[in-house]
Length: 431
RNA sequence: GGAGAGGUGGCAGAGUGGCUGAAUGCAGCGGUCUUGAAAACCGCCGAGGGUUUGUAGCCCUCCGUGGGUUCGAAUCCCACCCUCUCCGCCA
Image (cartoon, rainbow, N blue to C red; front, side, top):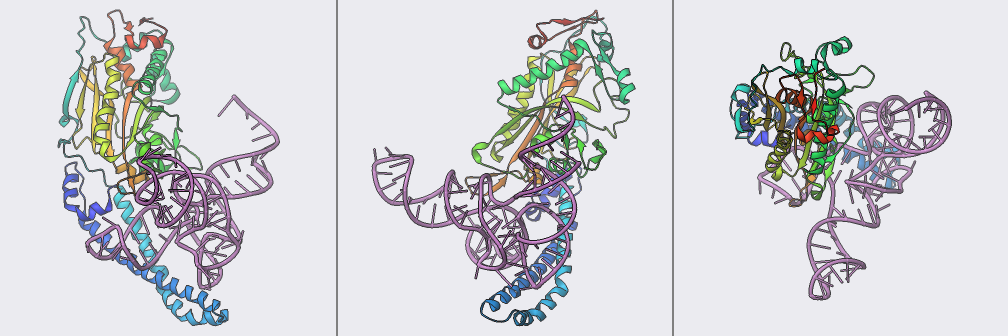
């Protein structure tokens, strides 16, 4: 959520910045709403003040010895006059405040100046590449073909029997590799990068989703569970982990807070029909290790670099070739001010595919969820900055390993870094 | 599922109808003292919004949420949510 005061004072600049990401900010509508709010607020406050004063007078009179009935009678006429208008004005003010909140909640974050202008992912800016692309002197198989033949295996048909399209079943060594990846990543981030591990609910209420920005606009991307209470399956650990600090005022010395969290993620993938239908690139359910940071505003730029580096460290340790791109304005998520994607090389597709998305949300989410810190310079609670990034998506990491580490006979070599997590095993054989 | 207790400021914890936006303690901030620190002592210290050139003043709202009673509600009534304790059940 944008700061309403900034919207008042720097409306034109914000409008221009939002136009870069294709959002049309209706400043006239805002100004009109804000003006109405001001009138309604002032009027209702005036009436409330008058009413309060009259009530107080009754108390004073009674205390001074006036009989209660007489004291009431003295202000009855005034009160009657006030009440004629009061309820209506208070209701009007409440209504307009609600409309302004709704208006603000649907405005996306302002992109940072360095975010390149662009329509879609083709306009993203490549920042750097890392690792050598593998060369194969045989016909490469994709992970679906490889996985099906591997010991244990990767099975989409049986998953479909259970749950339909976009689900996977893993067994034996493949399931073990997947689990090893998660353990390996968690251990690296907790041990080497200083993140505190958290375990959180996978079902959250609408407030949490509003806090991070999935609601109110993107409800169709979520799975809502049937039942009395309004609960949704989390689309990413970002939601529960960031919202851990909703409605809190943190002391300066508590920051930065760095959390790593492994959860399944559930996404309806509405609107991506026909996209990545083969394999486990795009699933309704996948595992992810997420990095979340809450930092002082002045630290968030450095934090994004560091956090991205932490995600990169996983790919480097796994010796997977990847590149880092800065998302253009058109590809930027609703809540993000700046996003760096990590894209891993997939030999079967001969291109880089997203495996991590690291974002700085600045104070956008913090404002929505009222996560603040006490700024020692001002002594006041102020919105803090939030960031997060996948470190990494486990399903896609598995795909990348199968494809990049495949051998001519259909077996897959286990990356050295993962071997300790797989009982020292060096390869997974074809069945 | 049954019975009971409770939700108040960063935290702990008073407060059963008006002078309570809220005692007190802790934490925090400023100061006195001290070579320095600690202790002691003095003072300040909830949040959001509006008005305003203003971090001054003034005004409004907020004691789980939403209704209600009343001239007046943290305080009384109703509903809901949440937490805790005991019993039952259960991984």
